Amino acid sequence: MSICLQLAKQGVGKVSPNPLVGCVIVKDNQIIGQGFHEFYGGPHAEVNAIKNIRDQPLINGSTLYVNLEPCAHHGKTPPCSDLIIKHKVAKVVIGCVDSFHAVSGKGIEKLKKAGIEVIIGVLERKSLELNKRFFTFHSEKRPFIILKWAQTADGFIDIDRTSPIDINNWITLIDSKILVHHWRAEEQAIMVGTNTALNDNPKLTVREITGKNPLRIVLDMSLRLPKDIHLFDKTVPTFVFNSKKNEIIKNLEFIRINTDENIIHQILNELYNREIQSVIIEGGAQLLNSFIKQNLWDEARVFTGKKEFSTGLKSPQINKEPKFSMQIETDILNTYVNA
Image (cartoon, rainbow, N blue to C red):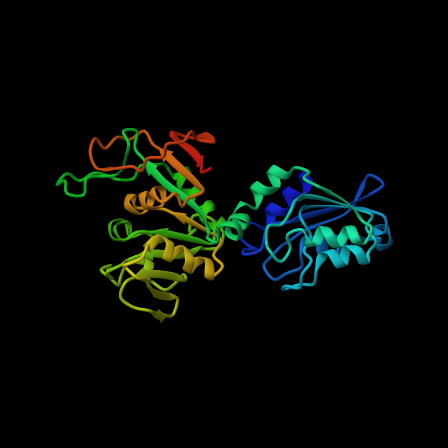
């Protein structure tokens, strides 16, 4: 099962909105085939593992390991449970049950009815963690939300923009920047508020690494952002949530939302309807605090640098102990998980 999980990770950033799945097939204590779900719309992990077995008759009576319950419905591909039954696999070991309503329990039931021994819950916690985006999307009916910011040693997220003194507002080091670009490539979307777009003019791309750019999202309710900012360059699909209009201009889509209703809920509902399973919120403080206040977040990744601003915009506050901490040169990264 550990090998299944490692295989599944190779699909990060390529299979959404499908889950990450790896599969290993064993006969007489020897691995005879393995595979993973490589890209959205492509063959599932079980299909690839079976296809990769050189001596096909060996499948009969084998044990199949997979980190997620085999599907039992027709989607982009035929049901994996049917394929497993067809090849007369004797035992199926599953990391965790699939929460998606079209699968949940149905694949297991079909396998058992065919006389296949089924074992559930091997490395279950790790299996659930691997597909936390997929499970959150289907259980909460919204994307998995990652909050990310950098703060100074004295607790500021930005300089005092009204100060006449010219201060470099970059808090973290280059290694942290490269790591953040890796994170961006792993998620489907990235979002900032109006002030961040205006003050920092970010590109929100993965230019420091090789990877897929996420969908860019900016909140600009009154449409006051200049037309020449990087987010409007049409090189990457971009959503602009606003209160004025619906319009599509090449890769740039304006989506109107109602100011009389909860803005964050409207955004998340729209993203859910478009099958966006994960979003990194990269600022600013007002947008980050809105997600924290409404308890609409799942993970927060907070860099703390050695620099001090003495005054400026206070960083968001999370009253939780970090689940994970590490040192990146002189930056400290704390990861908080909502419960």
